[in-house]
Every structure is written in C-alpha cells, then in structure tokens.
Length: 144
Image: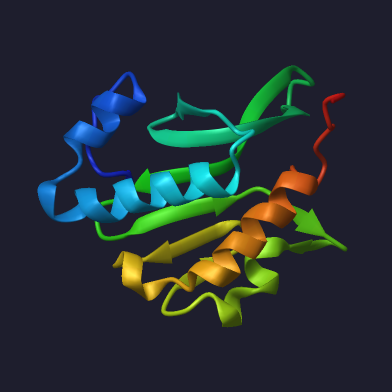
C-alpha cells in the first residue's frame, strides 16, 4: 500500500503545483517555515517529497547513499514531516511529541491533518536540533 498521495512530479515546483488545492496552503506554509528556520538547507526534490539538507549512510549492501535530514510530504490523508535526527538514542520527534500539538508521531515522522494543528515553536526547536544532529541510528556522517 502506497501512503504517498499520487504525485508524478520531478521537481519541487511540480510537486507543489500537483498538491490538491485544499492542502496547498498547508504544504506551502510548512515549506516556507522550514526554509526560514533552516536557511542553510537548500530544498530539493527527493523520493516524492521535498528534502532539506542531507546526511550520508551505508545501505544494506554497504553502498553510500544520501537521505534528507528533513522531509516534507503530502500523504493521502495527512501531511508528514520527517525529522532524521537522534539524540541520546532517542528520535528527536518522539522526544518532543507531547509538545508538538495535535499530531501523531512515530520515530522520525510527524503526521497531522492541518497546519494549525502543529506547535510551530516546538517544530522550530526540533528543526534546529536536527540541523546540528543529523541522521538516524547506524548512519555514517559526512564531513562538513
């Protein structure tokens, strides 16, 4: 089952323009919020989502891959923000889940129905933490 909303885009601009009208304001607001919070992370199109920043890791075949530190995705029934960051063995999104508002959090994924449902002060803090502590369990950091 594919949880991503159908979107045949090849760029951020196409991705944003293909989002249903009733969800565009929320996605655009979050896209702007992430860019304002993390100006060093240039957005790019990544695996049917918008990615911001990246880290390198080794896949199961020990091949070097890159993955976004932050991702924004339009799903069929909600919006998701993925925060690829761990502190002291705990996913940052899960660590602050109780302060994020009316959201569901599972590991690195924050899901919500409306932009107004998320506590932007807490999200801002989480994004800043991720900027300083990118990656997931078992990743290999790239040199800065």
